[in-house]
Length: 198
Image 1 (cartoon, rainbow, N blue to C red):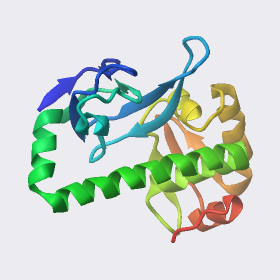
Image 2: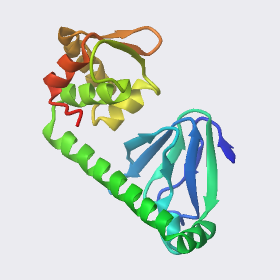
Image 3: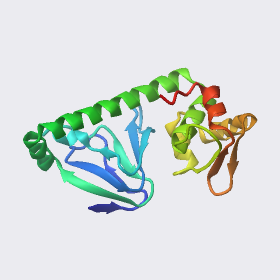
């Protein structure tokens, strides 16, 4: 087990990928460097149970993302050479890992499509529904990380995020103190943004 304090860079973009990480506690922000200048963009935020560093499976791969701890993070660290040996000895685990990588790729492609085709209000609505884990009724959720990170993940500025929350008040979504958000009717919000629970 290894711990990283909030703000620590766990993996740096372009450096040799040496370890595979399984998140036990905390959140990690995946940043992608721009090809122009030194601008970075949040591609995803991973929470407990997630993993990153799949590039370490090969002996010469470089890290695709910069991974930064959003809060105090605890991870299980598996060196790449150990992971390769385990996968060679266990084909079932190898196929599971390939499936997991495929799902991650599908998730990233879906996010790209959403950024291109959905409004800011629809993207925020879908994020809130996913976070709630519910399919009906009302719910109060606590945002797991800073609103600036959420805005970046959803492809908008913090100011646009505030305006988008204000727009969602008309369908009974309200922000509360302590980073909490109440959703009056999950199904109504899902209808609004075209979210499918299937």
